[in-house]
Length: 245
Image (cartoon, rainbow, N blue to C red; front, side):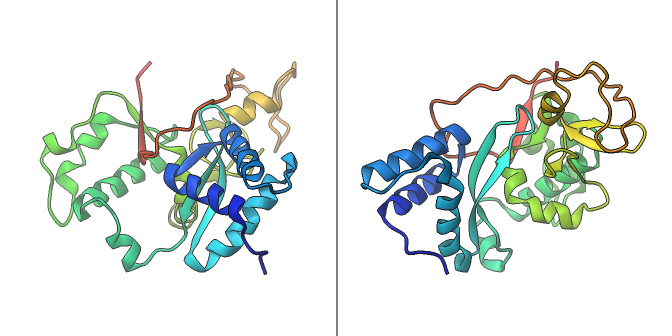
């Protein structure tokens, strides 16, 4: 049974609830701030244990503070996610049934693609396929570019993605998280996130696949990671636009 929550846990949870998602370095600073503010013993390497205690109390509410990774730059994030799939949670959505259908079909395209991205044109073409009613193309119209699932979206929908797209989705051979954007071994099909590949192959003259040990033919990515000093906005969109190169 989880230990009782104190004011440091409550302040931490309230901040996560208000922001929705926090970058890892911001979360660690928040952990320290909450402990010091409420005169609670602080130890820098106890963040996961601190969150585990909170999650023990969130479990009956079908919620969890979950740790995930950005597929763009490998940075760690923490988000409060809803684990339940009930009529009540569906009704709590701010989107119409048709808008949710558009998102579902867009997600189908993202998961079916090799790159983990979908073009604005492909999304626009979904307008005539929606049920229970079609949408006008001007309602669907997006800015030009390619769209990906946001970090928070992947964290929240991880189990759904694993269940519904199990034949399409692969785990990263390094971190074992879902991989939508990454590099794939041409011999065995193993897939690796770009940030994981950058870290794993760093300094190797002859990079080999970590699964089959055959030569890795892809260009080793150069992923820059920068620390975030301010938390991201409280609203994080499910889909995020990436400009065409």
